[in-house]
Length: 288
Image (cartoon, rainbow, N blue to C red; front, side):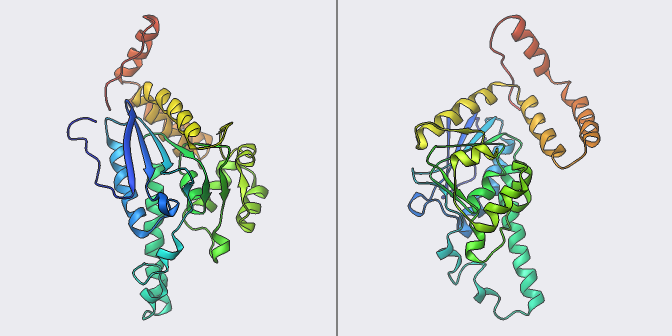
């Protein structure tokens, strides 16, 4: 990384750079199957905010430490402890209206933490293996690309613990998959679905052939290296325009693209792309 381009301190996330301009973020609680506590999700927004603006980062891989899980979701035991913001004891002296406001603020903060992945200006590749449950689905649908190992098992588990998923799955999964019947099936039953089923409905775009984490990380590195080799102006512009247009009309998307590219087309990267092609050499792009 460039001098002065230092990430925030993290206990529950590992950050490495296995390739030039490619960041690898690992959720780091393998002994707990990478389950989330208050402390874990609090570290997420500062980390992805840093990566979003870091000139040393052009593509990001997100995975779970260890070999058993991407994440099994919320650490239910930790969230039921007296110190957790969701423990009923925290609101036992409040009336209904104040309890609702307290919980809404907490849910809003949690939603914002996970949305920091989606809002990151750099493309994020979710490299999933093992168990991906509950919050793991919330995180996955915020990523730009989802790939998984053959042995991955998914589930939208919230109804099994008496909740409607509230961190993003119910809003994003129907748009990601485009099959309302299948989405309601997995969300209302909390049933486990396989990697092959996830691929068949379009939830993931690639499934490994041999199983295990090593293969999926290798594929994620291949994809990230290609992304990082492109113009950072072009890649970040493309993500911005795709995300902005996702829930808007074609007309609105075209208008926003016109305004955006009136600035982006002035980048030196356009000429460098053309020259490198003519000279049959690898393009070299300045940091952004």
